[in-house]
Image 1: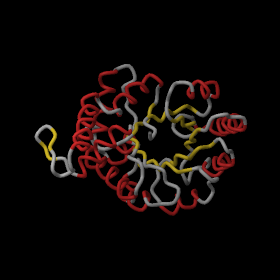
Image 2: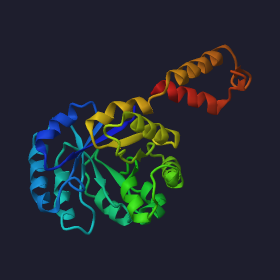
Image 3: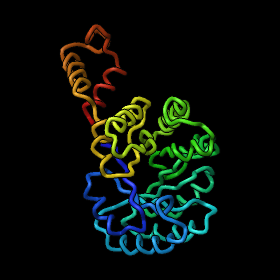
Image 4: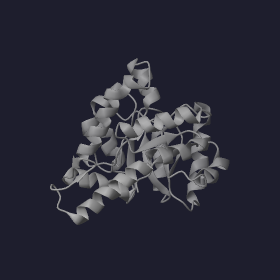
Length: 264
């Protein structure tokens, strides 16, 4: 089952690293970018490196963007076998991603973070780059860069393109941006359901309290599971294209959808 939750942990808080891994999040991202103030970035990198040297479980690392004074030193972290992959903020230039991919160890992957208008217009090339595992959407930064005011319907067209290019490139369904609703579970569940509705397969998390709602929101509902079972049971008794379930013809796309639901 593909990862559904990606939990950010500030890179300058090593006391939280193991705790984050024990939250049940499918993936943990040690964050050296937004979560760390400029004057603390060098110290945070050192703390992350020390922890990675003895880490027993793999994690992702969000390094600083190209063009910042911290990007090149951050790359040194890739030598650690416990780095599962790298998230690159402000992913805009396919050539830069290719350069970063050339530094990866076997098995390591890239999570390009699309959070600028320039990056959005380069999605096709970015999604088809080497070592790209899946795309992630930095919705908050994208709003700031684009001037779009709203994370709901205002960004539907942006999310759709992320999903379609991911599909075309053969990537896992993209990771949607963070929900700022930490203490509002109803709002969080609505955010997750919207993400799933638009074809996303995971969500970035900024608090452990968001993980359960994310996992439940991306999981098939009981109604979907029952429908999928009914389709496959009907298929066993008849021929595809010649049977109907709930008054609807069962053809190959319907069968594949039912199989994918039960595989989750």
